[in-house]
Image (cartoon, rainbow, N blue to C red):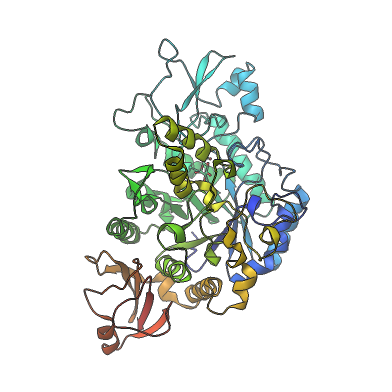
Length: 544
Ligand code: GLC
């Protein structure tokens, strides 16, 4: 199986990347216009989130036709041109396959609720428990029951996400065949790789029963047939060896090894999310606390070392279209913290993902009113928080930190009106700081976050130690820093990142001791070396 150790993936959220036709919505021709920028950044693959026909209840993750382009985003001819133009620049396209559920507007679901029994077997319909009670107590990801009453059929259907996203029944071989054909369809159009949405939720438990401890997640994540279904999908769609990444909700290390070990022919890598829950109080996304750096370090070590021991492979990332901006979450919205965060993951073992705007240090949205939000999850939870007795201002504060819209604001291209994203009022507004944090400014400034990302991406390509080196964590008892050593043959890299907005000391070995032992500083976000680490300082030493 091919390896993707020297590659970097860039995630594009087309709706917010570049609008080419002045309707306030980004589109495929907008992406074509910006290919030179992406080429110059040095990335290899462009993962586009869904642009298929969709009622947009969940911004395109509610697909109503898998094999078309939504006219809001362009045409199939635009898509073909995108693949071709990208290819000419050495860039490859990855698509997002939402195969766990469809939209309720998909032809299959419409046929099902109109009485076609064949299509009813595509979804998960169950009888309830007596008086208006759903089959189990499982909760959906966006708040409320995971079951919806279907009045035509007089039973319930399962939706692990929005009510408009009914789950597909993967136990039905016909469903698996249809979905493999979808993947093959895009492969045949020149797509080079795939991201599979919540793919570890496709195999539901054999018995549907209440979750006595949680919301149900543990019961339906990494289900009994998930590995078998994935192997079959990969084989039947003909994508073995292509770059593939699975989005794994509430997963564990053991399963992620199985998903990614080359000999199993499942996926090339996985996204796991444990490290992005270290600021959830008691595991609750809607309860705020400062990030627990001790926990973050433990998780990085567990996943980095654990995956490497048995030949698994991680996708390494801080940001995506579902996460608040890392620089607002683990940093202080400033340049040093943006560079420090980038250093932390780009020199790890795994394939780095850059989410649009992360390379500029784009921050959270800073919205001040609920009217500015668009995301179904944010709007649902705002109501839930008020129902729980929170004041409007407390609820807004929580949504402000946790909303997925934080990452969905328009890409900041310039200081012009609408950040150079569109000539019309965009579908979602921008934080004011687009006037300074934008591509045009950062291309001009040699110390910008953008130029730092370019340098890190190139560094990976030029240095086999970053691609192949072993990893071991150091400063393990120091809760201010994340630090690790990479080794390959006789070479060594030491990566040290200060997660505090204050000066901190190293415990195992001081900076001057590294220098005295012959280590050379080869990268960092401050020019000189001081006695201690400065706020959000990152420093990389090498020893040959
Ligand atoms: C994934 C997507 C997210 C979507 C959900 C349901 O988590 O990243 O945006 O809402 O799946 O498809």
